[in-house]
Structures are given as structure tokens and as C-alpha cells.
Image (spheres, rainbow, N blue to C red):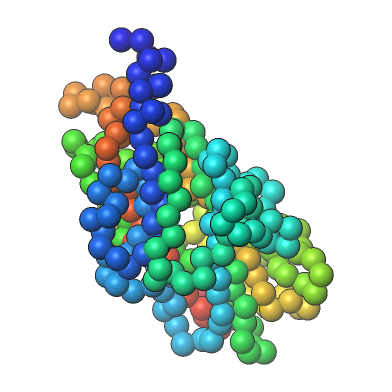
Length: 251
């Protein structure tokens, strides 16, 4: 079979719903990728008593190329625009983005956290509740073809946004693929100071991407690698939680 024709059929058939919702998971039965919550709580869970405000953004990108140079100062928009960050004001309300999806495409997000106090606190973000549905074999779960990546950590000042500071100590950021272990907690970024004294800022932004790899194809029952991504068709990949933890000292 011609691989190019098979690839074209793959792109043509796929429909993607990115879901931030507490409504029934059945509405994403035909999804390729979703961010959802089956437990009727907010997508982002604050695990501590430290008071912070947070906002969640999704990058509006009809081409699914992601954003390599993100900025909330310059790129915030409304529903009618493209190539910009859209605020999701309430994670308990569904926000759907629909479009055909193919391996090699990228989805960009941002979480903005603002301290409500004067004491330093350290932010950690983890993924949880990773699931795949409709997979033929455990080794071929669609979640294993998705990579998560921290793109930028920056701070808001009065009129601007700082450079990328994710490599500054004590920040620990992670780039990795999800595994087929559904019970795991996947660290995204840890030990991010919410208050930056150098820039007189108490608002930090973490930009991260989810990338659908075009180089992971799965294997057949004998362990022989496939040559395309067709094994992932009609599967559902869900991220049920983004855990937000605040601590008074680095972990």
C-alpha cells in the first residue's frame, strides 16, 4: 500500500476535540486528543492552602504548529482570532477546538499564576489521570506518541514580560513522552518562584506544549515496528488533571 495515500487518509479522517470540561466524557467518544475531567472538578487542582490566582490559556492555532516564541503581553485574543492565546475563564465550562489532526502537530498552552501575598512560594505543575481508549494493545496506546514540553517560564512586569528563565535555579523543567502506565504522575515543572525580586514581579507564566510525534508508530504483536501512525486512529487520549502545588521552599 502506498504510504503517502495511507497518510492522507489518516489526516482526512481524524477529528480533534480539545476539551476543558466537567461534562460527560461521552461527548469526546470520537476524539483524537482531549483535556478533560471525569470527576466533575476543575481541570487544574490546587493542592495547597497558599493563596494564588491562576489563569489558563490555550493557543488558538488552526494549523496546529504551536508557538515557539510565546507571550501573553502580545498574543492574547478572542474567539474570532487565530495565532494567539485565548483565556479559558472557567475550566468547568467546555471549550472546544475542532480540526483535523495529524502526527507532527503541536498544541500550546499557558498557565499564569499570581501570588496574593508577600511571602515567596514555589510552583510545581504535574499531569495526572492520563488515559487512552480504543487501543488494540497496551504497547500501542496513543498517549505514548505524545510528548509534553516546557517552552518558557517568564514573569510579568508593569509593561513587559521577561526573557525565558526556565533554566534558572531552582527551577526544574521536564520534556518527556507519556508512558502506557496510566496511574503515573508526570512532572511538568517544579520549584518555580512565584515572586521574582529582580524584576519586582509576583506573576509567573509557564508555557508548555503537547506534541503528537510523527516518529512513533507502535508495533505489531511480534514487536515489529509499523511504518505509519494508523494504529492510533480512533483512539482517545485524555489528560484529566493538571496538579498545581505551592510550597514555601523548593522541593
